Length: 258
Picture 1 (cartoon, rainbow, N blue to C red):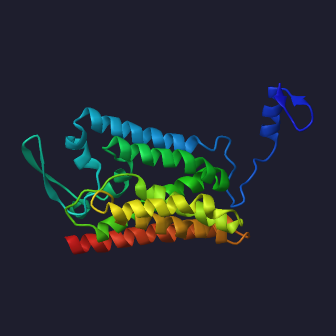
Picture 2 (picture 1 turned 45 degrees about the vertical axis):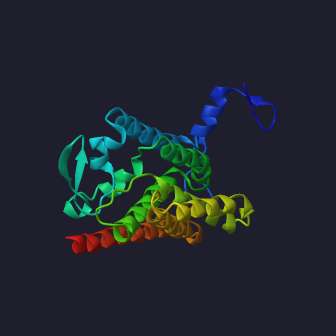
Picture 3 (picture 1 turned 30 degrees about the vertical axis):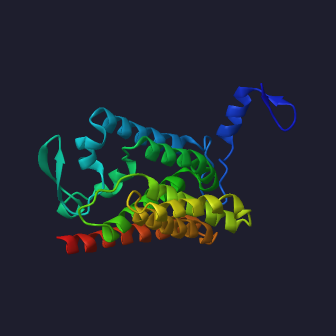
């Protein structure tokens, strides 16, 4: 038996009620997920699987890093005494903008990012629904990747999910402000992360962090400001515009690097 508002219900009754009742919607139009942690768990699983592959194939010297990390323009990589030319985004490898978001080498790097995703992800998925949360995560990360493409050295590799994580931080801040919540719980965390980014500029990609944060602010703004009539259409259009800007910015930068 399962506890109900009055007394208890049998599991079969609950399942029948779920089948016969329209699924609840979130305040921003998405379907309310049954398990708000599922998407974050899948994303964490993918990141951990890639990290394990890199670890067992050489860690920082793994050739997998050259195939997945973000590299604006081609460079020569020397691993195991052998020199190879690694193609970058400008050399016809645009997928690096996405794959770099799932690539980590250091234990502390993946540990912090996945802990942040585990904390932030379920809250946001519960607030906006699964599809909107996944779009928010991936697009924020891509905006961070484009910022790296434009602002970092062309022959420098960048990797990690930090851009997407900073996008989630920004989104949670926007949602808290929208509902009049207490932002004092998240502001110190955001400030601390930006301080760490500034203090260790050679070890941390400030470009990806700032880009992801700005992307999260814009995308969360689209979600909360879309008018109730035709909300889904407005949100889709807003996300499509951000995606189009990512593509245009990538093409312009590739033209310069080429």
